[in-house]
Amino acid sequence: MKGCGKIIAGMAVTAFLLVYYVQGQIDLVRVSYVLDQKTRLKNEKEEHYRQLKYEMEQMKSPRLLENKLGQLKFNLALPEEIRVIRIASPTAWRVDASAMEAVPVSPFAEKLTNFLERWVKVAQAKTDV
Image 1: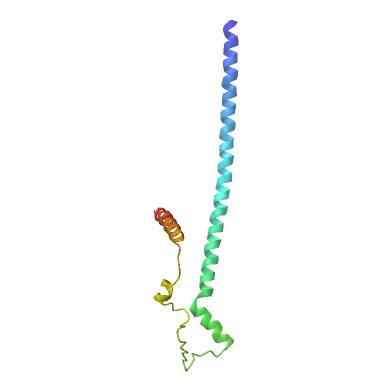
Image 2 (image 1 turned 180 degrees about the horizontal axis):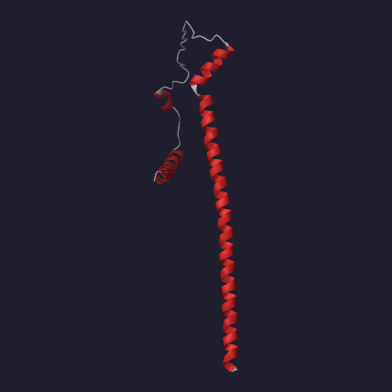
């Protein structure tokens, strides 16, 4: 009788593992049905999107727009005379080089600007990678 308990325990464990395996397979089939349904729904939506995109492109086509304009009878025509108005370039924005030399710059400010320019150039060089 000592070996009989081990056999019954082994059969119980085996039965439990088989039931667990079958439950896993049933869940797998259920998931595959859900996946198939979602894939079919996705494909239907993609097809509907393609049809709507095609219809939109057809509505934007020049031929259809010309037909609609002809039906509405706007009597549009190209302008007969082309007028070009030329504007003189503004002279207020021109800066003479002699005026730039007259601006006083302190040596400390110049050193500070040179120092900062060096760091800005390094930072810009690193972003080009």
